[in-house]
Amino acid sequence: MYKATHPYEAQQEHLLSFSVGDTLCILEKNNESWWLASNSLGKVGYIPRTYVTKEKNDSSDVVLRSVNNAIEELIASAPAGMLKPQQQALLKKLIAHKESLIANIKSRSSSTKRRAPPPPPPHEHEVKVSPEPSVSESTYSTASPNALSSLPPAVPQRNTSLTKPEVMEKESFSPAPSRHDVPQELGSELLGILKTTLNTNESKSRAALSAVLLAMKSGIPSLGSTLDEIMETIPKENVDEECDKLGLALANLQEIKDDAQQRNWAIGNDEDKIMGILNEILSELTSLDKKSSIKLLSHDQHVALHTLVDYHQMETRVSLRLVVLQIFGVICSLSRNLVSVLLATVLPLEIAMDITNHTQDTQKTCYSSLVMSMLFSTAEAIPFGHYGRLNQAFIGFLLNYIEDDIDDVEQDEQVVEMFINIILSFNLHFIVPSENIVMKSIISRGTCTTLSEKIMILVNRGDDPVLLEEHWENNETERPPPSVLKFLQDIFSQRDSATFLYTNDMNVLLDIITRNLADLSSGSKLRKEYLDLLLGILSNSNYSESRHRSVDIGSSLHRIKDEEQPESLEERQALEFDKHIIDEILSNYGHLFSSNIL
Image 1: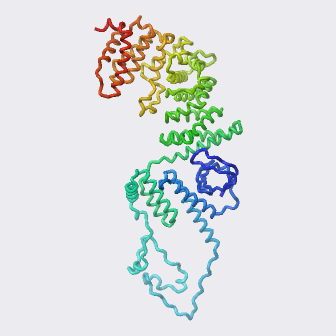
Image 2 (image 1 turned 135 degrees about the vertical axis):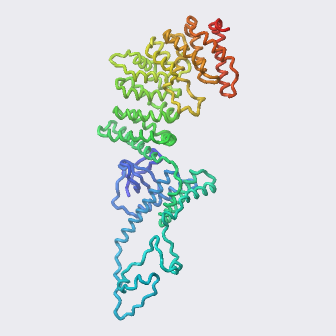
Image 3 (image 1 turned 30 degrees about the horizontal axis):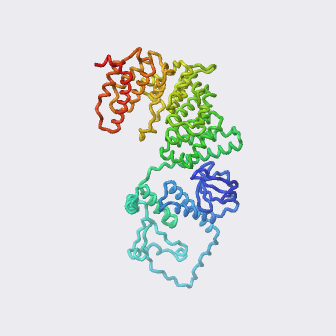
């Protein structure tokens, strides 16, 4: 038994809270920093090992009572006896610990008992009467009485055959069940019975069956081996047991973060330990299934996310910050909701400050830029207070780097592309062009040669470098617009920014628009984006002077206008949007195409 020397308040559901002086039973010591323990009420969870000390008087009986309480509490906590896979694993550990304790108690008890004296030898004048043997006559026929008195009783063995049938009838002896005595299909049959009886799914039936068998094993230890064999026949469920490792790693980081906040300085020799914890978090997040990771990270109002953000904010060592940034990248790819939580924290502000202050560190800048573009990629509104740092000066810094206008800073091509991604994703948040910080920065700067060339490459390929496709697979209606087309639409939404492209680039863009209007099918949502862009070009550029590809553009507009209604409601709605934009184009700028259309 161990006694708590410090209080501990659990921050996650698999941890155990305790107060100073509480007595705790340690069930497992597999982790260097966290031990599995139970308290006097039977509650089980992980505790920080440095918060407890071993008691001098360690009674096995007290430990056994604590383990029994934990088993009863665990079984009682399961609704209708339905233990979750992690609870089942915990119950197995408790039962194994109980069996070990019972064996130790019996061992100590037998070693302290006084042995009985041997029986006295028979007197010579006593008459020796041999009972009728019940086994083979030759077994003891030549043995002396002394030899008979020293022989232990025969112990039945598996596959032992008795020579006389009448002995089998008298003893009614059944050999201990062997592994092949438990039919391999028994688990499946029991599972089927429970599914039918409980009218529930296989997962809940499996949990109920496992709980019953484990409870029987706890109550009737002599049946333990047989019940274990029955449990082995239950069809296994693919349950990822790595959740515990991830939870413990996050708890370790929480302890380090809290400890560092109290010290207000970092210990130089703890880098290897922290690096190991961070790499374990990264590894588990990468290997765990998405659903399990999201559930763990969302627990208790996303306390794990806030722990990571706080730690990133306080950690100054570059090597550790790089791993934390990689962790944020994995988290952003898991769920749009997790991105939303991170966006509302100080993380975007911290990353922006890192980017502006440490641009020469290419690796760190690229990781920081990637995470920032992922945070902005959902087009969700940014908290208003963030604009104090995410302002026109910040965008101006990115533009200056892209255009190689920062003194004493050597430009890196990879960083240029990452900065462009930040601009594209950040631009998604602005709906009103006149309030768009990105457009204001471009207008203020004037010429953006490198940026315009990179944008033309992206639009020609049809790439969207900031879209996280997996976030929108089942929710197309909320998918943000393509970032590159949205950027160009905003560029051509006002005359001051419509000079962004040189004449040759403008003609290439018109070629791309013409190609897509001809190729995209009726009902395509992407076709609307190109029509919106065309309307902006016609409204705010000098297209009337060049009228590049006017014949082809005019033909495509009239063809789309005359398209028949598709069968799908969604496609009909998309076509209606297309025709509405075309009506506006032809109404205001039809004269640019009228002389070419017969």
